[in-house]
Image 1: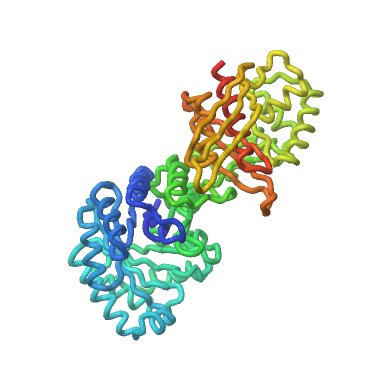
Image 2: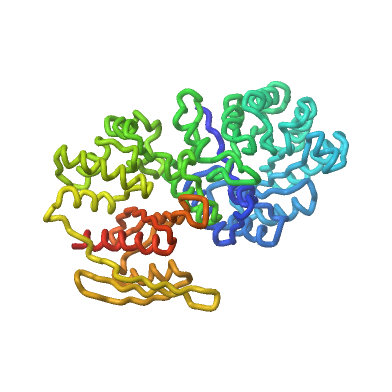
Length: 504
């Protein structure tokens, strides 16, 4: 089987995505995690772009040992000098230079002839090779470059010392069939192509970045340039987690493999999302919240019968987990299985009533979490041994403003004892969290999400919080309200009761 080199450009192209700028410490954290993920190359940044970018690339080069550390440079001496200065301390440094080759770029952006472009490509490849044996050359906008000219420039830069030639679909224009042919023609027409690795860098403007990268692999590409969560310029880049899991899931058919540590994928995805502030869409392949979630009754029944019925990948393999979402589409099999897992012993009549109440609740609230299900079961079965809520709320008073310290004053009923707790915070939600922390000190937040269910200022707010107790056990709660702050209060209340009941 052929190994595919994974070149991660999250810290360079990914960070160029609007709003994704990372501080030095964020970049170091992500780079360390990319090393845990076992990527082959980390493109750490564009050193000439700013002093901050230079410092980040240099810090990563000094600290991260196993992967190759690459910096990007234009075909300009000062860029290449700065790039080498940034990566020279790496155990395995790489200089990545680029020069546009498509007619539109040559004529309107660079204002140079094809002959001048070839001259510069050769000149600066040699210049970079004087610093570093590991040089990558990218003919920018290769997918819109004339074939003969592309073959000519690739051959010339390999002669000049390029060890990797990258064929970028810079504007996401290509379709898989033509992109695959382009890679195959390079292999067939460039006489010295065996002296270098062929890389591909695909953008997602038409939603084809992963498909084009796969077509390139099928036609002989050696390296894939990609980003975590597919972030990057405009619509983003080829998604690392998607292309890697395609190659793993279909490796027998494709006869290729990667060295990626699969169980680090989900963790890396979440770290990049937090570090960049770029939220992962719920239905994102592989790492989205819904990627291994099942609500439809038919699907839930199939999963309970055999996971492979509706899951072609084992979610545990990437650090994810399969989730049964209890909602209005859920059937008796799934709801019954969840109740059995929670330790309830109910009869068929009770189950029918519970299913009806679950569907009615889901119509109003969208999602039924464990606390909602527990309350429904209690109302249907009247279980005398069922523990009620330890904490109840009598009154909530929130203050916030541009000249106020945000505060929350909450009147609690805690196992029959009345208490009033006041707390301040960075904002009203943080103040609410601090008030609940007085009651349950080990109530740690693992994930927190607030979103509007309907698109208006009068819409319903849905708050989803994943809590982690002192035993590191995680559980999720969901609460909705037409007041966002009160939705947060109700979510914290659910979490507090869950932890206290388990402590009892």
